[in-house]
Image (cartoon, rainbow, N blue to C red):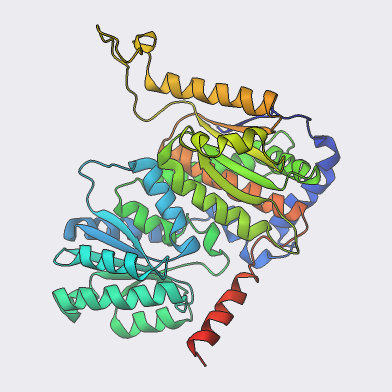
Length: 424
C-alpha cells in the first residue's frame, strides 16, 4: 500500500473543503459525465480485463523470447514510456543475462541515435513491436520504415512478416491498413484509453512481457490500485496527493520536482512528466512537472532548491526496501577515512542522505515536500503505483477544471513541421 506523508509541508491543506468537489469528480468519472469521458476506460480496466487477450500477449511474448535476441519497440510518448518505465524499474539498468534485450526507437528524429541503433542491429536476430494508434505519428513512422527495411534485408519479407507485431487502432488508421496488407500480428489499443494511460493495455504489456516480467502480477497490482484509490474518500492517498498538489498550486507553487533516490526509476520520472504535463497543462493552467534523481542531482540542482526562487515543491518517492543491498567493509588502513561507515549498508547511507536532504530543504530552505512511501519495488507494487498516479492525475486535472485526456497544444508543432517539410 502507498502511504502519503505530509509532515514536511509548511501548511496543511484544508482537506474538508475539497470533499464535495472530490465526490463530484469521482461520481463524474464513474458515470462518464465529465469532459473527456470517452477516454476513461483505464479507470476500470483492472476490473474489465480481456483474459483471452492477456493470454495471447503472454503467448506472443514467449514466442518472441524464444526466437530473437532483441525486441525493438517503435513508438513515442505513451506508446513507449510506460513500458520502458516498468522494464527499467524492475529489471534494473544493468540486467544480467536478460534476453531479449529491449531497444526503443521512434521516439526521436535524431539521425545519429537512429543510425546508431540500426548499426547495432546489423546481423542480429531481432523482432519489432510498432505502436501507434493512428500510424501517422511521424517519428514512429519514419523509424518503423527504416527498421522494417533492415529486418527484411536480413531475413527476407516472408520471415520478417512473422517478426513484426503492430499495436494500433481496432478499426482504422494507416498502421492498421499496413498490418492487414502485410499480414502482421496485431494487438488493439482500446478506443477509450489514451496513450499516456495505456500501460495496462497491449501497448505496455507486450514489451513488458517480452522483458520477462510477470504481467499477471502487474495487473494484480493495478487491481489493488483500483480498489484502494478509485473512491471519494479524503483519506485515500491518491485523493490526498491530488488535493495537496492543488493547494500548493493555489499557493503559487507552480513546479513539482519528482524526486527518487533510485536511478532505475528515471524512466518512471519521464512517464510521470508526460502523464501530468499533457493532462494538466491547458488553458494556461497546471503544475510544471520535472524530475531529479538524488543524491546525484543534489550536486547540480541542490543549491537552487535550497536557496533559489521559491517556485517549486518536491514529491519524493521513498522505496522502503531496496531490491539489492551492499555492506560497506572495514579497511585496516582507513586511508579513505570511511571506517565510521563500516558495517552499515549502502541503503542506510541512502536513507540518511534522504533524511538530511529533507531536513535541509524543508526546514532550512522552507521547501514543501510530499513523501510517497512505497514498501518495495516489486511488480505488484509498481502496478499499484502506476494506477495511483493515473487516478491522482485525473483528479488533479479535474480540480483545475481541464480535460485530462486531450492535448490540443501538441498538434501545433506538428502542423508547422508538416508545412515546413512540404506535406500537402
